[in-house]
Image (cartoon, rainbow, N blue to C red; front, side, top):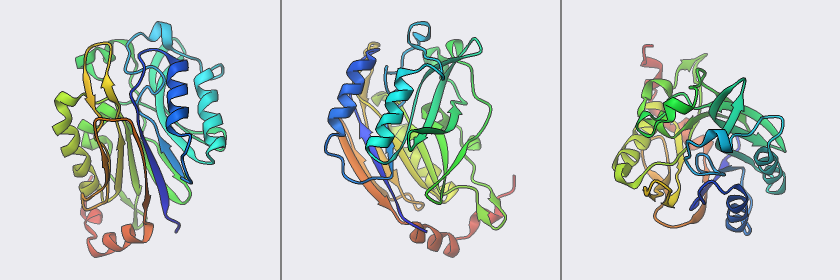
Amino acid sequence: MNNISITLVQANQIWEDKAANFKNYELLLANLGNTDLILLPEMFNTGFSMNAEKLAEQMDNSPSIEWLKQLSQSKNAAVYTSLIIEENGKFFNRGLFVANGEIVAIYDKRKTFGLAGEDKVFASGDKSVIVNYKGWNIRLQICYDLRFPEIALNKHTSGNPEYDLLLYVANWPERRNVHWKTLLPARAIENQCFVAGVNRVGIDASDLSYSGDSVIYDLLGNQLAFVAYEEQVVTVSLDYEELQSFRDKLPFLKDRVL
């Protein structure tokens, strides 16, 4: 199995200004080398806004989705992030996994963040999503989902774990960054998988400060990359053989009872 390289794009999002955010990402990624998968923060084009009536786009008429498709083609890499989508009269904080200029998978955030009123504006998703990309099984998650281990449990089926890599895209405030730094390695350890989490930096319109703390963990909870407090792009290669070797040595997922 091939290794997979992941690029975390830790950006200072410009509040509700899609064009400015596109430009900023393009500048941050201008010198990006080879990579397989690019992660952008939650609601990548607007910041974590509840102004869905103004900002929502349609799946079949979305400048933001077209931008993601073009990014995937120009960088020859998959992209995972979320944005505000309106569908059938409802708003969704929708995760999109885009590769080769096409939408490969859709994941609607399952746990909407009541403290910010997200649950009053956005409908919750009801499905888990695992994408197969370059031979890796990848589970998609968004921000507040991180607090609920039951929706990320890695089942052992047909002699193998369901997934190998767990992704979180987030707008996670600095005031609760201890939770972010604690729960991400916990998910890696309990699910015997790599975990990548990308977060924003800067200050949003609600005067919330974000420290970033974008990170990648291996299945033992060791940090493979970590960046905080500034805009930064970092790429890490993940070793599939190393993952399988540790799973063989510590085969405890098969003992999980669901």
